[in-house]
Image 1 (tube, rainbow, N blue to C red):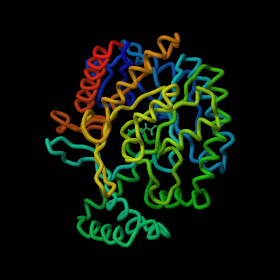
Image 2: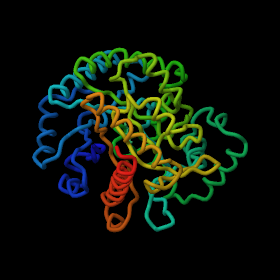
Image 3: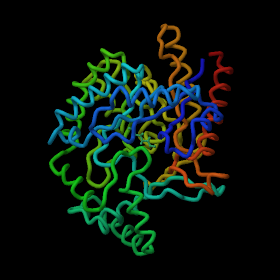
Image 4: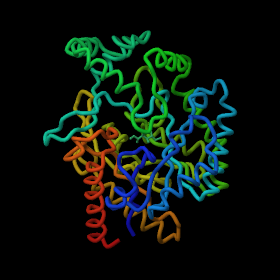
Amino acid sequence: MSMLYAWRWFGPEDPVTLDDIKQAGATAVVSALHHVPNGEVWTKKEISTRKEMIRSKGLDWKVVESVPIHENIKTRTGNFISHISNYKKTLENLAENGISIVCYNFMPVLDWTRTSLDYVTQDGSRALRFDRDALAAFDMFILMREGAEESYSKEERENARNYLNELTGIERQKLIDTIIAGLPGSEEGYSLEQFRNALLAYDRIDQETLRQNLISFLEEIIPVATRNRQLMCIHPDDPPFPILGLPRVVSTEEDYARIFKSVPDLSNGITFCTGSLGVRQDNNLVKMFKRFANRVHFLHLRSTKRDDYGNFFEANHLEGDVDMVGIVKEIIVEQSRRREEGRNDASIPMRPDHGHQMLDDLKKVTNPGYSGIGRLRGLAELRGLELGISKSIGL
Ligand code: DNO
């Protein structure tokens, strides 16, 4: 039995079509109703329309990524009570449509963050990259966040200043857009002014408060998911360390352990994203996977390559710092264990996460990280890896 090969599809506007996805070797789709404003209920009708669109091409809408969490829920301010009740209603409506795996994240203000979307790698393909000096330059000298200097050492401040001085006006604007205009799948995009205000909402929210807010949210929604036999899977912070003075609570093994200890139900699970978690040297991914294997409801497989300064770029799927061979072996072992237990979630849904912009995709406008050919390469490599390991260990 193999993983369930899935592919993220952003909906009818996605330049990579459902027909393309079938040819890539995926049988399932990961999708979301991105047009529904964050915080509103996804109606049964809207969900079934999307589901039927996918089914008509012979594919299955297996995972929702993401039902976004409104900022009011993260900060427990404003209308958070009605937003949580809408969230529950959305879960009910998804369950009625037979959709049982729901991915989400609890990153304050921004979903995933990069500073460059077209970093040229050694072979000429383009990758996403995170550069600490670029982020620091944005933070201190463009956004001019109050107190930002305190987040950086003297050396970092100087490096950031030098970085900024090298930028042309166009590059500077590109940096701003990359950080705050919203990467694919993010439900929020901001102007600089809006962004400053959004950060202010976290002025009095430290790491422990944010963690408590997450747990309070889980205490409300996990019982609903359990009743509906749904699996919730929280995506790690990307990058998995604090940025822009914001707290982070889903970056390490200890963070996950605390989340699961507080709300132990099995439907409180994880989107095991090797690329996000792998950015931290102190995250031992194989160890983490083994510890939480039972709760891995969804897999994002990709790799990153970091340097000693804390910069990283997205490497080819089987290269970089992630021990993909070790992880895929553990996935196979876990799937076999579930099969023996007679669990109906023995085949874990995965998607090849991100990919380089390469070959023909270099001539197209693509969703950064989500071009067709780069992910096709990733999926092909990962399927081959799984098959090879499976055969060699006889599982
Ligand atoms: C980036 C993605 C994230 C992810 C969300 C999950 O490519 O992995 O946008 O979908 O953080 O809620």
